[in-house]
Image 1 (cartoon, one colour):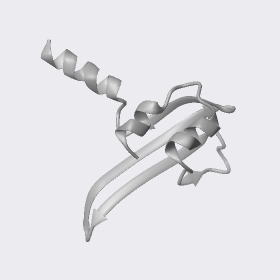
Image 2 (tube, one colour):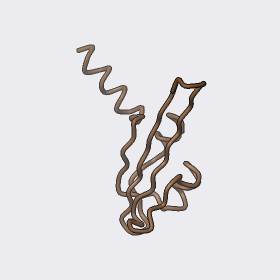
Image 3 (tube, one colour):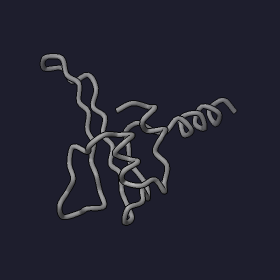
Image 4 (cartoon, helix red, strand yellow):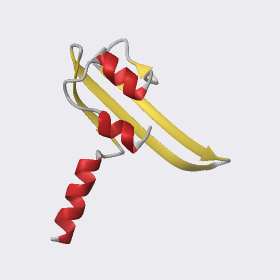
Length: 85
């Protein structure tokens, strides 16, 4: 899971488009079909170096919103502009 992948997610995308961008989700909850969970963990020995999580939510076949430990680039640039003013 990369910054570029998160930046490509837009509300209104179909499930097929989301799967194309992110790949097959780690978890497709059979009790909640409108939620897909993705997780990427990179460890070296006992030391966890990277732990990224992303959850996408659908309304029917359309992406309604997502929750990620990696914010979209647009949010990062807005934070930098706010801090510099």
